Image (cartoon, helix red, strand yellow):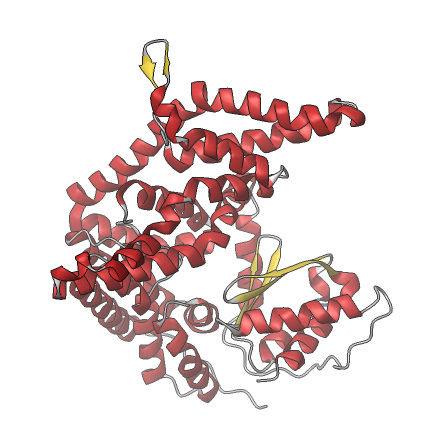
Length: 462
């Protein structure tokens, strides 16, 4: 696949350099912030071979490319941006006006979603989630290794005495030993402070020598408050640092600013933020556990069923720090397997659409998106199939609900976050039940979509 060609076409169709304010990427998407979104030809971007779909999320145009491809296209896009003078760059791609068949009015739908999500609270939750996104590869690597070792130990318990296996066990737990420091570093960076100071404040909270200190008759506890306390102190440190740089004379700022951030932030962390963080962290853990223990299948049914609409509303960002806290406290998150069933429902719903539709372009779209959907990347199916068609999206929600009920009934937990679908199975503490839930979600989404039906779009001429 010609990644340079894809990048050049996208560059041309979004209005070129003068219209691009910020460009970045994640594992599956090229993410662009534009000065004028009306200059972007969304329909023509969807037409580019290699583009799986688009999404307007808050103030960001997301071009869905899929794992691997997103990284390669971003590299070529960055090269184009670097080598083009603002206002003088010319693209080698002409802007075409013809359109391939479009399923539903996706452009208007995405605009509505963007408007709903652009609230201060949701923008804040997105910033919090951005702290953890760079850490997802670490969670995936350690979670998968933990799952593989767990399976190996069940097959042969004697493996635990092997030095090489013990070394691999250390590797599988590595993310948790540095989690607070990573969170502190990323949080300070996200909120405009010094990443190093954020990391140092996090180290203060988890330093082992805290256990040797008794203040006012109370022994200090290393790591008290978990990542919630770290988040608060790192954000406080970043905001304090920005303020101090404004009020302290420049010639003294280099010395006084970091010193005051450490002293004020560190003391505030120990005396105030750690106790508050502990209350919040314990509430999150006990609330999640109690909801699933007492609610059982019903809780799983509700969570699995409403997850896709929550993603559309942008509320899903709030779950990232919750998953991280559960992983830090218990070693697994019991919420992720339930929520992952929403993607499985998409698979079943899309298969039903494939069976019933006579639209060749729609069939082609589904076939190209199913493999990555099974592997847990659901955006191409959501934005290319079920959401534009409407009713299949409801069928997908129903599939997710039934799959979530299975996961909650057996309290399946996962030792990773950031992955979904079939790959998540290896990180769960009950692989057979997780796979059963996955199949249940496929089947329920398929049947629900067949029963609900949908308006089959007519084939448009090329």
